[in-house]
Length: 445
Image 1 (cartoon, rainbow, N blue to C red):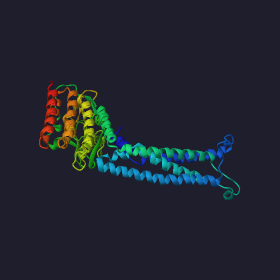
Image 2: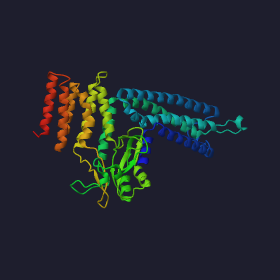
Image 3: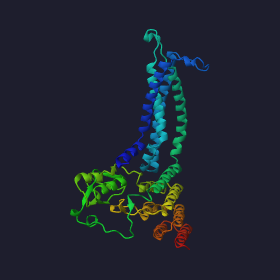
Image 4: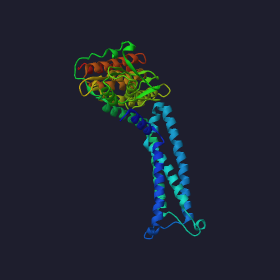
């Protein structure tokens, strides 16, 4: 799937209007179909049902008007409650979470149900004809009325669901759980990551001179960004296909999540066909937008957890247990990541020729994005500091790589140093003891 198509799908998933709009279109089709069936079948099918009787024009109009009017009122209430929940969550937990609430399918389906029921009733209402209006002919779509009653019952059920759903969605434990689960799923998807094949060599290959970091600008072709914003997606397979088709070797200069200005280098090209249309073809796999997207940007999800924890540990909130929940989920994600192989930056085509020099994120960089950013805040509270170190210990036990263990030990030592400036006495001794246990675990003692 191209970067443009994936970006469009992400926008539709995060939009608040798409699902309600689809349900509205479905209600229009349903109303027209029911009226058409009623016009062909009539109301004779109701004669064998003792509990169901045909409605007259005035009664049918009253029923549909009552259902339609109540649906508009409830839809307005649902929309107001949703906006209030979004404002509360954004103010309490950070504006980064706004998209999480906007893409919530429960809220979208609830609003769509009420609007669709209202529109269905209005369309069916328009088709009812009384004798004085048509010169003796009466038409009441009986089957359509039964469907309207079914939709009303479904709307009441959706209202009960919505009353339960909104408090559940804005509960902090559920918010953190959803972000943490998505982060772990993203790690599983991205590592190992595949951009072509890893180059079959243990030595660092000799790059074309144009792709060296300090090569003169005249020695390379730059693929410039077409707009200003965040790199949201990079279609790796599209890049590999473009490089192979035109005989290029390219170096990716921007990761998902990076902010670029129009004209900034997205990639460097060397060799092969470097015409302007080829440069445009290489730029197409990069998708740039106004905000960061968690689709390929794991740092974005890590930042969300870190931001919630930092806000919870601020003096104005002082909620260390929420911060500890975030630390737990960060620990689960990094414990999973600790045993994974980071992708090689040298990517070759099917023939084994170097085509793409990627810029993959490293384990230490991701740890710095999460635990590194939280160290200052966690060091201000003894409970959070103890959970921080205990979580790092679990990650250390899951990690077999000595370099990664060294990164985690350095992170723990940083926290202990910061904690010594924030509190003393028994709490500090406990933190220092936990830090010593982590160092012993890392050393295999």
